[in-house]
Figure (spheres, rainbow, N blue to C red):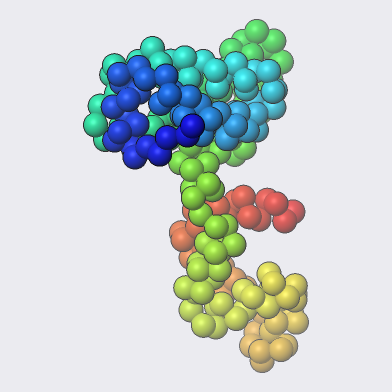
Length: 194
C-alpha cells in the first residue's frame, strides 16, 4: 500500500531508516534518474550503476538528513556529479576523448541538474510563448514572421514596409531578450530546430 508522504515526514522517516520511505523514494525517482543518467552517459549499464550508487549513498547518509533537506535536488545533483566522475574516469581509462571534445561535452551537451529540474517542472511551450509575449510589439511581430511563419528578412521588410536593417536589428533585440528570459532553454530550443 502506497503511503502519502509530505516532504518533512518523508525526510524524518528516511532519517529513521524506515524501509517504506526508501521504497517510496526509489519508486518515485528511480526511472527519471535512470533516464537522466542515461542521457548524460549514453550507456545504460553505467547509468544504472550510478543511480543505484546514489540510492545506496542516500541510505548510508540517512542520519545526516535535516529538516528542509531538498531530496529531489540532492538526487539530481548527485547523479549529475557521479556522471561527470564516470565520464572523467572513462576518459582516463580509455584516453580516447580529447580535451576539446570533453570540454565541449561538459559545457554544451550535458544539462545541469537545475536545467533538468526546470524541464521537469515547466511546460516548454508555455515558457517559450510567455517569453515571446514579453517582447515589444514590433519586435514580437518580426520574430513571429521570421521564426513561426518562416519569412526571410527581405520578405518581412517588404511586408511591413521597413528596411532589412530594421528587421535585423529587431531580430537581434528579440534574441537578446529571449536569451535573457529563457537562458539555457533557448539553446535547447534552437539546437532542436537545426
